[in-house]
Every structure is written in structure tokens, then in C-alpha cells.
Image (cartoon, rainbow, N blue to C red):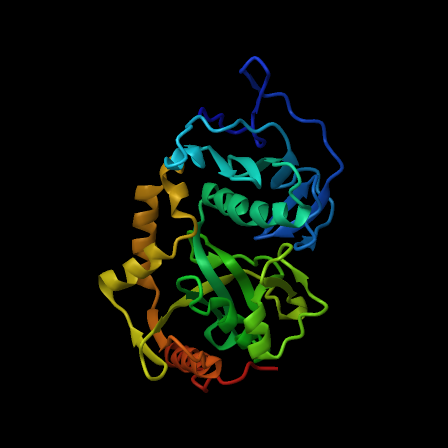
Length: 341
């Protein structure tokens, strides 16, 4: 797929196969803000904060023509992800096709009968993740929580089901604001900008933490996850990354924490990159490895082992806070058991 640099919106294919670079007419757009970016979208994005009107938004999301796959073999990754450094093409089967261009534009074409909530889930997840990569962020799959005593954020990472969201929401209940959920971009300066002001809440997590899901909306129809609005528990300013906590359910008797070093730190961060299949078509494989290596060399990484059954969320949370206390600035060494008022 050819990439056109600096257009600010995705090129469109005409019926004769040529590329139409004429700017689109300005549709009725909802103005929203996330990750420090002003976003104009022809699809309302209620998960995001409203933004004041701007003449030149950072990102435009709009419906348009998106070509079908050039690769017909469904076993070939290029049937779903293709592109070049400036332009990424995605096909989420039976949901949506997208082109993400120059870190400024997402053009989407939804499949028939796909509801808005399901479409938004992938635009703000896969699509926004690719756009942030194009804008120069390392994008990590995890949750970022602000710890005031550290003067920054800790990131919880791990496989699906490791307890990332459960831990973040449990810490929120103790008074620690959530900075970003699921998609955590990290700038070259090591700062995570504020993500969406909501967290993904599993049904079983809600029961464990005593959260009533009756007033909450599901991520999509039939899903076991809910949108949990964060309100004042959302951290509105970007924060430097102070530590990573790798959550690992395994056959152990109790929660334990182990500081990692050297190649172990690098491996954990590399394995928790968001959508690593995007790196090759974006030409970012070498750059990402170098930057992840630098991040690993400058940031503490801890392995938090917990029993695979019987998730004791209080023990996990206490372990993370106690470990954070150990790396807090020496002029502020009081134990991190509850957030400051």
C-alpha cells in the first residue's frame, strides 16, 4: 500500500483505482479530547471528554472508502494488517476496516449491521493505538495509576486475565486516580498522557469490589465488560512513568514481589507492547526495540506473583503500594497505604 505523507487525512481510492487527495467536506463533527489530542469525529465518542472548538484538530475520525485486503489468504497477517510508515490499513473481520494516516486521521468503513458501541470500541482501541504509534509513542497494553507520593504513575501489565483492570480499580477505590486504561502511550520523555476517563470493568471484578453494574453500559451487547466512568478518579494531567508491575497468576501460596533486572526487564516490556503486529508495516521494529531497551534501563520493573486461584486483590494492592513506598523519594518515605486527601 502506498503512503502519502503530510495529508492529515487518509487518501481515498476512486472507482478507477486512483488516489483522491481532495480534502473531504467537513461533516458534522463531535469535538472530544484524549491523550492530550483534540479529536473531531463524525461519530460521537461519548467515552471521551468534550473539547472546546478548535479550527485545526489534532486528529480527524470520519467515515470513508477503505479498500479491501490486497492479500486474499486469511492465514496471512497482511489480510488484516498492512501498510507503510505513514499509513496503516486494518481489517477487523465483520466489524470495520480502517486506514490510519500520519498520526492525524482515521478513516473507517464499518461492516453491515455493526452498532455504534462496537465500532467505537475498535476505533478507540486498535485505531487509536496505531495512530499513537505513528505519533511517536511507545504504546503499552496495561493500566496507569497515579501515585502522588511517587510524583508519577505506575503501570500494571500482564496477560489477559492477570488482573490489570481489577488492580487499577481497587487502587482507585483507595483514592489513587487512574491515568489510562488498556492503552497506555509513553512519550520519548517517559510521560503517559491522560487516557479515556473510564475503565473496563469485568462482571466478576465488579462483584469482587462491590460495584453495582446496573447503571453501567456494557462495552458492547452481550459483553461481560462494562464501561466504568471515572469522574474525579481520572487523572487529567500526563504523568512520568515511575515503575512497571508485571502481574503473573501462577501456582504460588501467596502474593510475592521480585525486582527484575537487565534482559528480564526488557523482555517484560517488549512482551507487553500494544498490538505488536503493527510494528512491521509501520517500520517501527528496530526503533521500538531501542526505545523499549532504554525505558527498561531507566525504569524499575517488578514481577508480582499471585495465586492463580483465589485472587486476593487487597494483598496485590498492598504489595504494589509497599514496593512503591520503597522507591519513593527519600524525603517522602511514609507508607503508601492510602492516598493523600
